[in-house]
Length: 254
Image 1 (cartoon, rainbow, N blue to C red):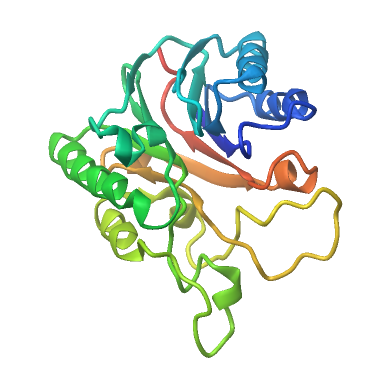
Image 2: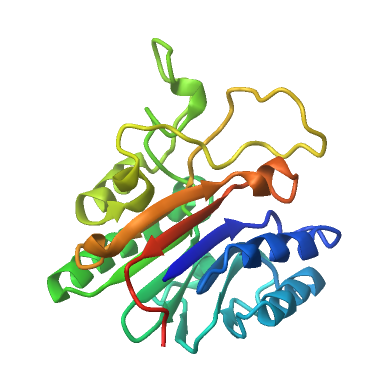
């Protein structure tokens, strides 16, 4: 089972939507999670293109004017919008749940800075619950958080840290319960999934951040076969994020 997640940057540019959808579909995913999905013309076209590409079963944060989440899959699933029951002031469209027969997928686009603290606290509580019940669960998408020392390129190799995630404390607490898939498959390695958007290619500065991640429950961890970034989404100028692809030793969802 393959799950692909990518942030399409402010809903996706109308002139790039076709190429974004095509690059997603070429990976032959069973599930696609779109962060910064918007309920507008570009979002509707992306949804249609994913449907034509073999992912007709979809749910999204429609009716919300800002950034949200879309989940598209090849097989049916039960969707739960705002699974933590957050108030409108707490960015309830930041997480969308898809329930398959053998897996629960939580598509994430967490807001910036301390605004995501409520979501991370909810994810920590969810992690405890799923681990106690031995539930196979995957939280994947743009978490806008990470480790200050390794996930911010500007902090590497210097005597002091020059930037930070304001929610590193809760991020690390989440790591105490659920395992981050890419790091599990690439221990001790460094990579960065977001760079400031540039329309034309040029020399890469040391301003990368690794914020696109996947966390797996203890019951799902033995099924993690691989986790890789597709930096082509950024290299081709389709968005400012790399896609994250997680392969699981599970049958395609039914």
